Image 1 (cartoon, rainbow, N blue to C red):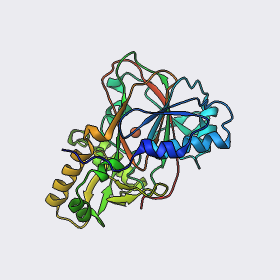
Image 2 (image 1 turned 90 degrees about the horizontal axis):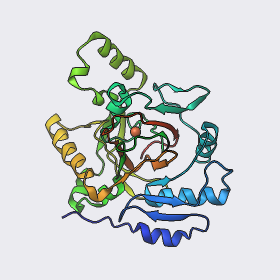
Image 3 (image 1 turned 180 degrees about the vertical axis):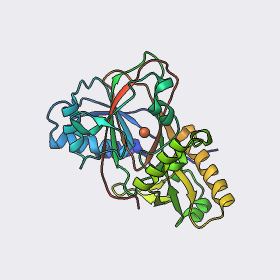
Image 4 (image 1 turned 60 degrees about the vertical axis):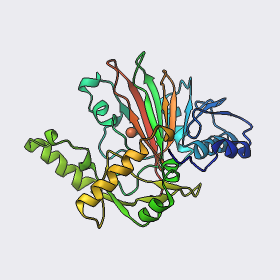
Length: 297
Ligand SMILES: [Fe+2]
């Protein structure tokens, strides 16, 4: 039996009193579709405030039919803070803040291979982005959904005994965690790994963070980048992380988004992890922008 999240997002929404948008939750606890916002137009301060509140309340929000240009995508993202530039994924020509994902058949795409694992974008950095905004440009007729998991609900679902045990622990997040043994069998691959480590060394984050805006606690781990728990024996760290990673995968903490051309997904990267389902054989192209923010604490 899963402990239910104590946070009532529907109640929070009623209190939020949206005037300009309709906010339709997509599950009992997490994720919402936003109706009535045109992200390509000048977004008023009032509309921006309502979108920000919906993001805070629901963790991930979805928009349909947003036929936006890269410049409009950038302008919208800038409302939420300074934009991030990815440390090594090439950016879109003329737009250093945008990374173009996909564009090759899934079998040839390193993005498709690396995104179908639960992860929080760039958690291996000291300062992972706080928000991501993904615009769907070319979407397969079927497949290619994105799944999201709520790490606040995952924290709420732990027993009080476990919460007390985890409090104060530190997790190390590393890009090396993403490598499979068969990807480290050549000098070229090992050199690439050394380059990654030199440019993006592992980052230490509290295992339990507090969301700076909502004050909610977050079980800040993900399958792809959380390598080990500091100051523990390897088998202790391994067993604990395995249990916690499995815990965050419970369907009660998840929602799943079916993409269409010009859909936009916007997630709070501080409290979520996501998984791009690699069950398609056609091109799937997206533009992503991420917003900088303070370190997880
Ligand atoms: Fe991602």
